View 1 (cartoon, rainbow, N blue to C red):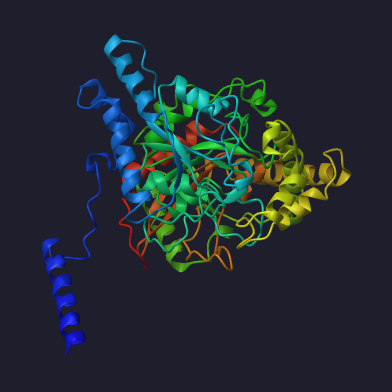
View 2 (tube, rainbow, N blue to C red; view 1 turned 60 degrees about the vertical axis):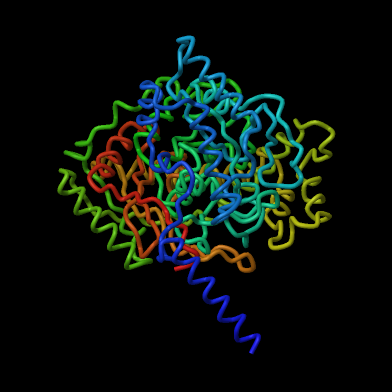
Length: 527
């Protein structure tokens, strides 16, 4: 009888709670600073100009949202660390307003950086690895420095797939030894993709105005796809990679991730430029802009000829349906869509070998530059650290590390021949050829599939994705939301020749404005 009465009391208590909450338990909870949700950079700057809010209020309210959604509530786990100096920086910017000083093009914009980008402050740069938990860089990376010069507030660092997903072939995207598993804000048991997992999830959940991710192959565009945001993987060399923990000299690039194409355009010009510390940026001379916002043209699709890559379709009928709807919209906006066949070259093994060689070279140089106190000076030390650590190998091995360790230097014939082969296949016989032969402005393809369920035991379950062609070529690709499959977003990618970012922004912005497919996440537990 007592047990029965207690049970009835518990049921009644739940009923009372439900009534007090409005009686609808399916309603999305209200989180702090709702006014920040889907706010754009242009709207933020207008608010500053009108005295509607201070930088300190904006930064404080973003921190409140991180506490409410990332550290509690849905517990997205997308932010590894909040910058201890964020509020101090905000105060200094408010003082700049008061004194009438030059504000910069990203004035007061709170930005999160992927935790493989050096910042000279109180935040370590870890690549998600416990081996680098005390790695406090002695200098800002050019990316961090340029953001500060533009007036941005570096709000914190985001979680990532550890070592940018280049440690184990059976890993779960968004997991790191430092940050553990990041969740997808649309459906929490789904994967955010990686390696810029935290950047994608945080932008989508309105925990920052924008974020910087990095990509070697898919690590910006895939998280943008899974998290329903806009992501630009620029031409390699458009933005300096100095001070970024490396994988590949020929494929690595940082890039902006935001909720709108206009925010991406606003951020991009602040990051470009030649840097003597990164030889790949030398080719950007005469090819980069300091302002890409002139490409934000609503009629940017009119008269354009886009090539839909047939080979990237077919893995999901629902994704195909979204892409066909997108094609209808683009044709209505004045674009011509050509269905093209781009046979995939047999370069998988060569591409992987190039990454192994370049990772070994790049990571040894980066680790050798770190303070002796870290006791991790090369890849061999890193492998040994993981073997002894209590967490790092809990779920995934380090097979990729071990394979890279066995490779030689970049003078190896295997490396030189493989690099030559993959460049020719993706550039001369790939993107350049397709655009020339079909008289195209750019290529078009689905970015990827809806997010799979996160599985720490078996790793990622990729169904389809289109990142590799642009990634291996080192050419730009811009993904924007194309729609939803049930509760999960799917993106569409616009890929072009080297340095064609202005054209891609023009086309993508026109599509975005015609569709308005972006919807804020609801943090569903499962679907």
